[in-house]
Image 1 (cartoon, helix red, strand yellow):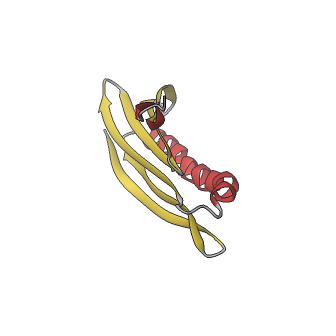
Image 2 (cartoon, rainbow, N blue to C red):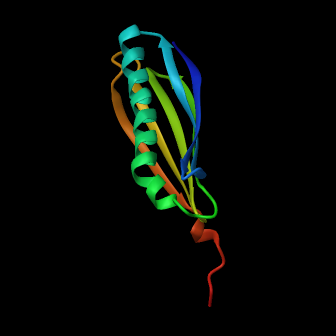
Length: 134
């Protein structure tokens, strides 16, 4: 049985002193269970945090510079362990100046080996729910 805690990270990336990208990330910290499997799974999410921050600095910050409202990025997760699997469901919400999307991804891990066995994905764009101009 794994022990899953939450590591929270908040940051605002500025451009010329003006907030351009606001990030709120909540990622799992995995321990317990089989130590090697826990380390492998935990390393995946630590790397993900670094990749998201790097992408925000490299790609989002230049696009958001000078906008009236900063881009917003929020990542949350839930988890469930059963039948030899650990399922970590992530929800990435992004608001890029009114273009809001939500990407849901479930990582399914083998608890014995710590290997990612499959990922289930769904993307929702909130633009589809806005009234269409005629």
